[in-house]
Length: 122
Image 1 (cartoon, rainbow, N blue to C red):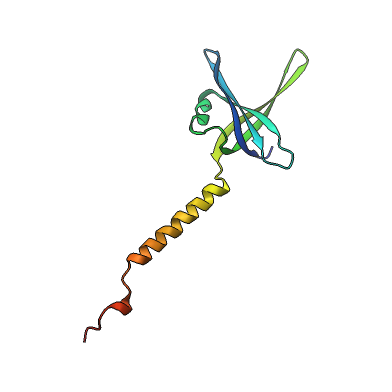
Image 2: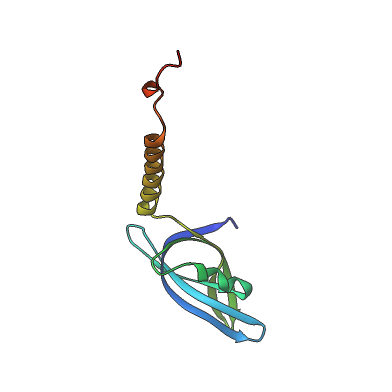
């Protein structure tokens, strides 16, 4: 199976739940930014439950995940197991970073002496 990835805004974190002494999980929901947005629930398990701690509500994330299917008493269940999260910078964050770089260049240019203003050494 090829790598699966979905990008969306974090809209819900259900927190970490300990199912047993040996198993814990954390579910969360992202909303895609497509023409017809979808709300998709993922789960993080075991030591990966802490991955979500560094993200805030409404941040845009790329979620890398695997599809897991299980059968129990002739019923079939599907889980989307996230294994990596990445923050996606918004357009406003990108433009702010570009503006900061441009402003830094302007302030350096203003402090740099102009060689034409200096007297000739002879």
